[in-house]
Image (tube, rainbow, N blue to C red; front, side, top):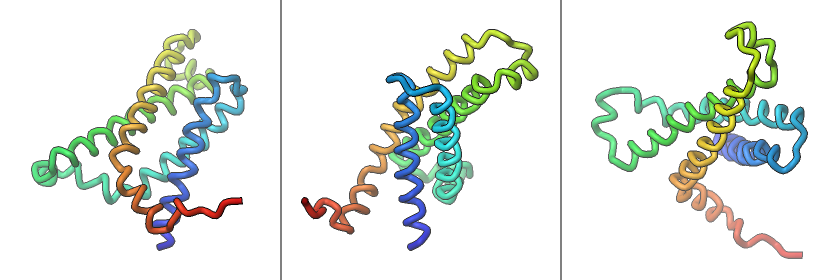
Length: 154
């Protein structure tokens, strides 16, 4: 039970920080955006680590053949999301610490890195929406069991 509560807590925090990371488009200071992004990256890593038992079987060939189309779509979205979010995190680090970018590539112009960062961020947003929609039944059943819809009113 503790593990399930930890998963829910990480998912809620991840959602909050993921949404906050997009606040840069409404005036969030860059330094705060970087901090929120780092926290979201850590929470994403924790989310993948905690859910690895559900994700790892897809890499076995005999398991993939047995999966339903729905399961294959879920794994595909999860894999694309992991890839897009990883690109977003890596480009964010390179933008935040240009010394690393210069030492690795010799690049001084960050325009291409910014473009990749923004593109991967919006692709991640679309994939997160799809990912959450795929798991909505599980999310709703969790809250339904706890009668969250019947919260006390003031």
